[in-house]
Image 1 (cartoon, rainbow, N blue to C red):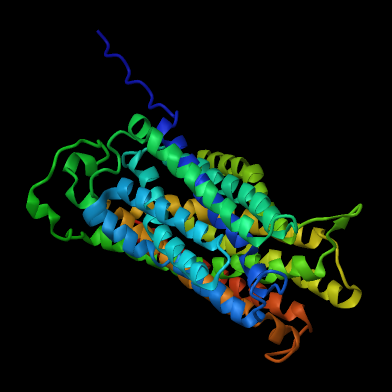
Image 2 (image 1 turned 135 degrees about the horizontal axis):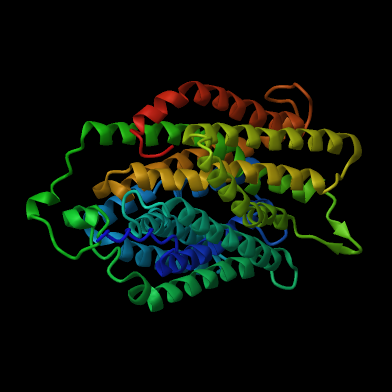
Length: 463
């Protein structure tokens, strides 16, 4: 008798993925909703702090950078002591409390709110992404598609947050602090959804620190056994694991080239929308923060296209390696800023310019993001040693800390550069945007030269 063929593995995603999708959607609603108008609030003399752009850029840099620094601490505590589940809950509560502090109109509560959000994001950010990876065993073909779905959740939240919080903040009937408060409400909704459904949809996933998991759990079986207490000692890494960590670190370095340009969305591009873009249509004025939602909307439209493209190329054996996808991302973000250079030159000659300049730039940036961000998240969960999953995700987010710090500090000098006080090439704000054409292209060239070496370091874990 001929043995029956083994059934093909199911490509249906686990229900737990969609719970994590919802949690991250609401967390990103709160984060991007508030970020959409934070810089404008800091420089506004109408209900804001009325700071200079340089001072506002410094605080914006410290805040947006710090939310990507604390995941290193959150990842370490999750791996060693708390587990990803408890870390996500702690982070969610702290983030919600932070946004409600911001809704109170006083300087002390403002700084307290930012500190709570920074700390809470450290617990939440790396661990929610790690939990997605914990749904799958090593080699599971569904993992990349899962991160694309998860990434759409991120951008659904970003789109809604930028529209709703941005509208409330800029509407005279409500004001800045309504925008801050709405971000807090979003975080409460996400936390409630998670707590009500965690046991039913995720079971014991994330309950136990990775350093104490059994060998079966490390392999993806998700058993509930405990290992020998001696296994609580820091794990010994093999040569292959060290090489894979090196690959994460190198790609993390080039990640900075992309995001320090991309994150101009909340600062210099936001100011360009506020001060130099035609936003009045039939007597109605579009809030400047709404332009940032173009990115999230484009993600939702194009993420399935890119996922399908990678799948078709893989079937033909032509899918680009992860480093080559990063190179393409850098080229696309540079192309977006080339568009911004054109828009800035037009604004110098003729005042307010068409909103199509910003829209085209955001779409190009989105295409670059789709070549880099979900690919990067998936790459980390594949390459990271099992006992260091959250810590390695924290290391990955450390590159975002550097990116946001650089982005905010450079944005604070937009006026000086536009006035030719730093250098003069094209003149005006075009010189500022030209920086983000040249630097990502330089990164793309360097990374393309290193791509084969990085693929070897990955030891076959990813394409």
